[in-house]
Length: 140
Image 1 (tube, rainbow, N blue to C red):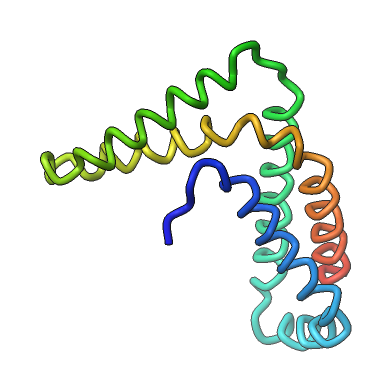
Image 2 (image 1 turned 120 degrees about the vertical axis):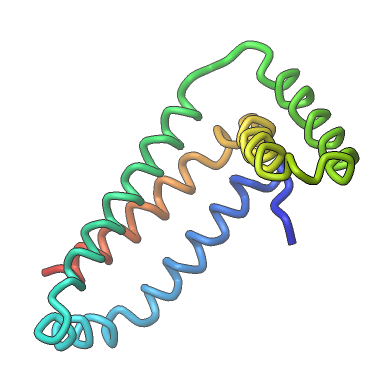
């Protein structure tokens, strides 16, 4: 099922919540397994480091989006929502442009979801902080 613009950041929050719960429930089992795997697959530390870096970048982007008040963002969100509806309705007319169409749709999803990001920022930041703390504990 495709992500709708209105739920883009809610979907991120749900994915983070599910992953955090998994880590909360299983960190005691995962940590010894990671320690054992490190001797067989030393790249496991790189995996954790890269994942932490990506999550930190996500947090930075969420914070930037939420902390920058943009007058009229609700109108721009309605505009991009209209673009999405238009492109979805016309996508079969230009099958050779599917890649371009998909690129535009990805941007419209982010812009259309902007009004809700400020509402979810604290929850998303908290989830990211908890997940990053778990991942750092797995690295040690």
